[in-house]
Length: 276
Image: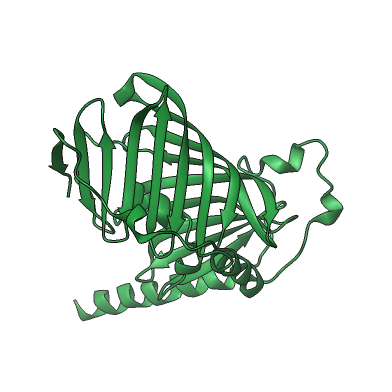
């Protein structure tokens, strides 16, 4: 038994070292590297950076803004709504972990989702339902809720990804793929960074069992007050097969937001369902 324990411990030590040692090795194109065949891409602009440099890019993008205020064109697709909803709305984000997204159509509220960093709420006025949960807690499966505001906030805080976690990097022809691990070997998140313009293009968050919790894709970056901000964000929850797309406009960053924006007020005649 002691010999088996020694072998197991040795493997657990060696594997992370191998991963880190391979961090900056180049690899050939693979199916996920779609930019390599895209017309109009100037491959001469592809950069070669070290892992610490790429890590600093990710962290600095997260540190670059503390709040975001914008209008949005919103598309929500889910089996729970039997198709697709298109509406307009507003987005408010404030570190740490606070976000509010309100979707409206024909002068009525379609949904109102809110996270204050500790708890989150997803209000559906038409159904007279409010789904409430704790942030950073593993959710029950088969819940009737199909969208989770706390995940949206987590996807916007790049600077917190590396806190007390191990990480390593793969270098692909047009992007860097950074793997962030919890407790040594358990996947926590995965970040794709464009090697031409140094923008985060994809961020995946994992559950404790290593399955995908939520995934976001970032497009259409613009310079706002010297900060690179994605104007198009697509967020997907595999468990509920739900996708939320936010096309942002009238973006304002680093403007103080009123605290009451992130305070939940129980709607009249609405049932509150705890989902944790």
